[in-house]
Image 1 (tube, rainbow, N blue to C red):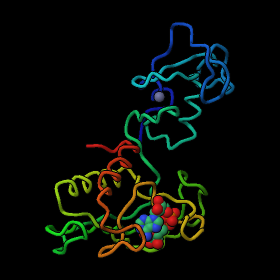
Image 2 (image 1 turned 135 degrees about the vertical axis):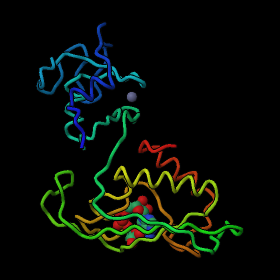
Image 3 (image 1 turned 120 degrees about the vertical axis):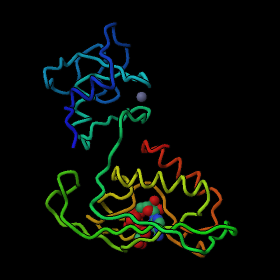
Image 4 (image 1 turned 60 degrees about the vertical axis):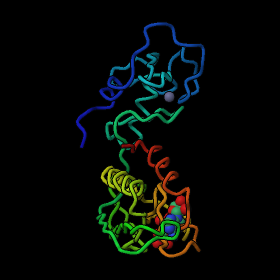
Length: 227
Ligand code: APR
Ligand code: ZN
């Protein structure tokens, strides 16, 4: 999907330090930045090379940052392990499926004067890919189609656009252990909360919840999804 190699991604988002590194431990390997990395040299990168991320200015051994990148989804984006700043567009490992939505002419509790956006996520079961916890093994997909609700207000429509972006970046679902059922190798929500209850709030995943739109905007931003 992305033609940039690990060293290219580092070059794009960090600057090699020319001056003496600070007398601090590298947050990734825990060895002093003035000495070599605890990781082996790779891709012609010297183990003592130290690099500074572009915007947040956090400093790491180059080979440490490269090892971190290579152990992730290798999608061309980099996330600072210290402050979580995202460089580029972070993508997840959501399995294949569809996202649809439409407006239904009923109000949500707490939004009496407006209609409701209903989102429908459909994901079938399948076989895990190399980006999943157990490649080659089956995964289950329970409770699909999953229906979710947003108020059809300006802010609700903004959240819908952000959720569409998150879906395209494969961030809405992941594969792992469901906290609710304890089942492994199953499709689960991925840190972006959805309202799956329509007329009430028995589960805590319903309305009224005046904080919800702001909370989900913050959760989306933590994944790098913003307007
Ligand atoms: N609706 C929306 N979000 C939920 C629900 C629910 N009914 N239950 C749990 N979550 C949230 C949790 O708060 C947590 O943040 O999803 C996140 C992951 O929890 P898991 O239990 O691991 O998720 P998952 O197995 O995907 O879902 C549990 O959600 O939509 C329903 O049908 C689904 O019953 C299933 C439940
Ligand atoms: Zn940082």
